[in-house]
Each structure stands twice: as structure tokens, then as C-alpha cells.
View 1 (cartoon, rainbow, N blue to C red):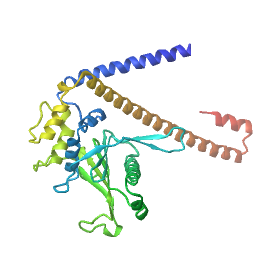
View 2: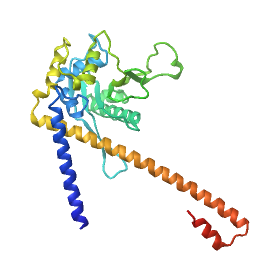
View 3: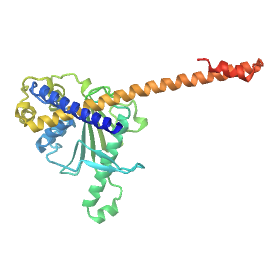
View 4: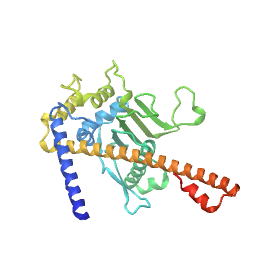
Amino acid sequence: MVKNRKKANKINRRRSRLQAIRHAEAKLRKQTFFDPTYDTVFKKIFEKMRTLIHFLNAILHLEEPNQFVYAEPIKPTINLSTPAKKQKIARFDIHARTANGQFIDIEMQRANHEDFLERVELYSSLLTVNAKIIMDSEIPLQQRTDHPYRMPWVYSIWICNFDVDFCKSYHEEISLFRHSDLGTPNPLPVYPKKRYIIVDLTKYIPKKDNSPEDKWIRLFKNASKARRAPKVNDSVLDDVYERLKISNATSKFIKKVATDMVTKEEISTRMGTARREGFAEGEAKGLAKGEAKGKAKMAKFLRAKGVSAKLLNAALAIK
């Protein structure tokens, strides 16, 4: 009986999920553009190398002759050994390296979570270690012997569609500085090879300079609600808007994006439920602890007054 009920519940959940995906598909077809903040769409944008190069030069504020001209994708998954039975896998959204051996991780985050800053550091550390392994595997033995601790440049870039509490502006960079430099104008990082760039879309205020970075941020913020592509006078971004058009997508890709949307909604719902249950449980434990302390004090007082054990137990049993 229990087994049949579990099977029926599983079928009902699957049916509800398929219905939710169809609903999301129908909603998408009423839009002009996909929302680029969903993983499936975000990764699709950077399938073209020239798009990735354009974005990196824009977000890192690079100008000629220091601009990137080439980048190749790298395997996005890295295994993280933990005490758990199964190894944890860190999966980068966009993992690439440039022609001059600089390594990149670009992450799109739609929602905040408790350990966000720790996650930024973990991913950056994994990126750094993996980059070091790759770099050492490709240089001559003599170089590795002479400079065993030489490290590659790494860029950990996070685009966040939520309010990042440690960001004062929409574009923040975190680096390693001396404490003695705090408060001094234009301090330089002690170790410049590891860079963290956090883009908080919620803090962005449109600018008049119409810089490449400006155009990218407006795309991430406004594309899903736009009815037509803006005039950006940029062949790369014009191409991105064309590829974001839902009318240009296959039914298979639309369904894939719809599934991504439903999955994200399910995760958000579960996290919300878990938080509510956690608060309720904590509150209940707090009340129980307070009640136990109160009863202990009452028992001590009644014993001091010579109340018998029978009456004492009866008194403590009263709710």
C-alpha cells in the first residue's frame, strides 16, 4: 500500500513538473528575447570565441594593446576531494584560457545564498590550482625546477542578479592589499595575478558613456523584457541579440531553457521551505529549552518547601 502511494506521488510530481515546463515554454514564446541570466542561455551566449573575448575586454576594462585576442574553452568540471562518499564536483559556467596563459572563470548567479563569498573564494582557489597544474604540465622541466611556485594569472568573474551586500557599486574588484595601504589613494595590490571581479546588476545605473561594459550590463538586465534589440553599433553584441531571439531558437532549445527555469524555481522553493522549517524548528527548540529551565526552577522551589515527590510530579505534569 505504502509502495503504491509512493509510486503514485512520484508520477504526480513528474506530471506536475512536465506541466510546469510546458507553462514555462508558453511564457517564453510570448517574449522576444531569452533571459541571459539563466545558465542555459548564458552558456549559449559564450559559445563563440569572439563573444567571450569581447566580454572579457569590456568587463576587465582592457584597452589596446593589452586586450585579449584569443581564448579557448577548458573542461568546466573540477573534482573536489572531501570526506563525503562522493566527490564534490565544481562546475564552472564558463572556463577558458587566453593565448598568453591567463585563466578565466565566469559565473552567472541569479540568487544569493548563505555562503556566497566562500563560494567565490572556493571557485577562485580551484581555478588557481587547476591553472597551475595545466601551466606546469606544458612548460619545460628546467623552468618548473627553477620556478616551482610561479603561478598563472587567474580571473574569477561573477555576474550577480541580486544585491551583493559587500558591493558598494555595480562593479567591484577584490585583490590582495597591505593593511598599511588602507585609506591611501590608489593603492596597488601586492599580488596582482589573482583577480576577483563582482558585477552586481541590481546596483547598475545607466551611464551616458555607452562603454562596451555598459552595453553588456544593459543586455543582462534588460534583454528578457525588451521587445526589440537596442541600437548598440557593435557587431558582436548585435549578433548576441540575434541569438537571444526566441523566434530564432529551435523548439528543443526553448524546452531546455524552460526546464532550466522550472528547475531554478524548484530549487528556490525548496530552499525557502527549508528556511521556514529551520526557523520553526529552532523556535520550537528554544521554547522547549525555556520550558525545561522553568520546570527545573519550580521543582527546586517546591522541594525546598517540603512538597512530596508525588505532588511535585503532578505539578510538573501540568501544561
